[in-house]
Length: 182
Image 1 (cartoon, helix red, strand yellow):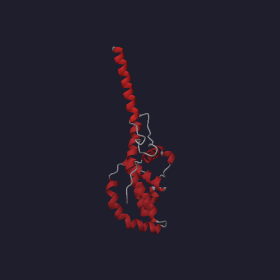
Image 2 (cartoon, helix red, strand yellow):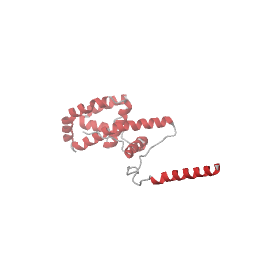
Image 3 (spheres, one colour):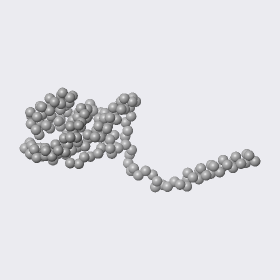
Image 4 (cartoon, rainbow, N blue to C red):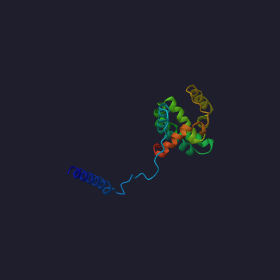
């Protein structure tokens, strides 16, 4: 009798377990993602992973500023005169909007922002400042930047910034790059 009860119990449990899994499946209950999953980069060393995650976090915060710089440079025009006029007309507004946020950047965040602006605009920051503010201002900013480890004249090279490129790719794939509006 015990054997019959045990076999019956097992069969009933197997039936209900199998029945519960097959009857509640709805083919429309899938995730509504509609694309590929984000790329995630892992390092074998915890310290390297931490540094990479911090780089991604900083890029996520600073990338919108580089995009705004790119848009502003496209709106300025091609001639030097139109660029200077645009710069003078919008300088106060830009200072009011972004000065407090950009003054609070750390040295590392400033270096990353310079690289991002170089990457997005295709021109180094020294030349951008020289065209917009003049040679003396560019020299002054280069001197101050050198004190903090910046090199405004250095062009952006993809092969030297592989980790930054990978972080940007990961963030773009995941849709994690927020955009600021200007």
